[in-house]
Each structure stands twice: as C-alpha cells, then as structure tokens.
Length: 403
Image (cartoon, rainbow, N blue to C red):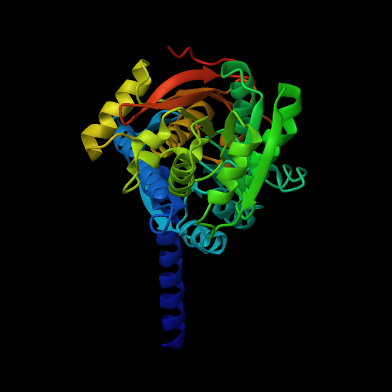
C-alpha cells in the first residue's frame, strides 16, 4: 500500500512538472509579454499616462496585424500593464520586481529619469531587455561615473539623452536665434534639470554663449520674482529653463508678470504646459523647447500615428505617447531581425551597427552606450497650440527629412 502511494505520488509529481514546463513553454512560444513601470498618479502623471497610451496603441496595432513575426511564426503581444511608481526610485524598483516575476520578455520603463535609475538597479545582471521610452538622464545607460556600460548592457532608451538636449539648446540659441547673453534657471534637486544645466553650461563657451546670470532653486520653490528681477537687470536676451511642465508654467508666468519679454528656451519636459489648468497661452509667446516629434509634421508615419491616437483617445499625443509607441516598434523590429525573442539574440541585433528603426520620432540607431542616436525637433507656440519650428541634428548618421 505504501509502495503504491509512493508510485502515485511520484507519478503525480512528474505530471505536475510536465504541465508546468509545458505551460511555461507554451507561454513563451505563443505570446510575447511586455510590461511597464511609470507615474500614473502624482505631479507628473501626464507622462506615465501618455506613455501608457502610446504603448497600448502600438500593441493593439501590432496584434491586429497578426503580431510579431518570429522566424516563421506570428506571435501576439501580451500586455502585462504599467504599475504606478509615482516617479519614485524606490517604488520603481519594487514595481520592476513585481513585473519581472511575471515572466516578461521586455520592460518598458521607467518613465522619469530618477525612477528609471531605481529600476535599473534591479535590472542589472538579469537577462531581460529594458527600454526606457523617456528616461533622458545620461547615467541611466552608463552609470553616474560613466563607467558602467558593461554592467548595463541590457539597458536602452528610445529618447535622446540630456547631454544631447543641452547641446541642442546651446546650438539653437547661438545658431538659430543668434543670441549670446543667456540666463539659466535650474532645479538643483532634480536630476533631469541638473543634467541639462550641466550639459548646457559645458557647451556655452564653445557656442559663443555668455551666461550672464544663473540661479538654482529647489523642488518646493514657488516664488521666482527675485530671480526674474535679477534676470532683467542682467541683460539676458534668452533664459534657458530646463524643467518639467507644471513648474514651467509657474516660472514662466511669474517672469512675464515681472516684465521679462525676452525669449525662453526649454527641453522636452515642457511638453504638456498647454494642458495645465489656468495656463495663459500668451505667456509662451517667444518660447521654444526641444522635443522628440511634432504633432503638426507632414511625415506620413507621424500623421498616421497622430490620427490613430486621436481616434482612440480623442486627444493629441504628447512626445511621451510617441516614445512609448516607438519603443514597442523598436523592439518589434529587433525581434524580427533576430528571428527570436531570446535575450542574447535580440541584444545582438540592437547593438549591431547596422540596426535602425524608422519610427514616429525619427530614424533611431543605438550608440555603443545604449543611447538612441536621433534628430530633435524644436517647437514653439502659435494660436494656443504647439508649433513645429525646426529640426536639429548633430550626431545621427541618417535622419529622415522633416519639412
């Protein structure tokens, strides 16, 4: 009797193991599992929610067209979802572990730079591809001392990085606006703002820019009147303001109230200023910011995306939505070229000098450090809308023309 029970128990165990293995293999064979982490509540919730919408639109399109072609098999994408990290590094790390336990093939996130760094700390050493759609801080792919790419070989980004945006701002002010006297306001408690400030300052002299005034502030700062009065006294022709959209509205509004009518230049964190409750669109006359794409572009790929997005969500997409969308399509192209979803094979494709993806935000290739090499657009404001101004390109080998 005991022997029979042992045989039955052993048989049961074998069956369970077979079913478990079969289930896992079936999951990996039949679906590609994609997850994300980002702020879908809190002060920068617009970034996470916009990115999420872009990701979900791309997945819907790809699945409606049969899925991703892996060798000779069409595989559908299974969307695991986005966990809210509230733009917190610690919460992003916890959320990553939760998503990683779901047997995912790709992590899209985090969305803000600080949260992405928290997530990367958990992703290092794991054979899981991580693409942040929108984390721009330089250190995300190489570490804060620039010497960790060998540890972060699985980390990529669909957006350009802060150093590049600092370069775009400096050259745009010098070459396009033909201005030399610049004041800078920056948040010394925010990695995004600091990264752009440092890059801009390092490139100022070589672009014939004289920084006539600079002032730092903190996350909880709300009164900028004194800084604006100093800017007016400095003779600054342009103010460089690397900041996120909600704080931008406060700072720019106070500047106009203080009587500063000069040019103000920002970066992609400005995308969203026109959605802030109570914003006075007139404050943004003579303002410009670097961004990843232009809603009003004449390119077919952009028009198709914008129309699909508006049809699904009844609103115009932000650059965060475009980058979430692009990140999915970058992965799709890499998998199809690799003819596999195996980490090593997809990684080999992404790091190949021949890889590129023509997506909404331009032709993207990847540098050896995992950074996207791509063009940047500069936006301005017109008739209460964002308006394409120009396209700038300094390092990308093969941009698409933007008219």
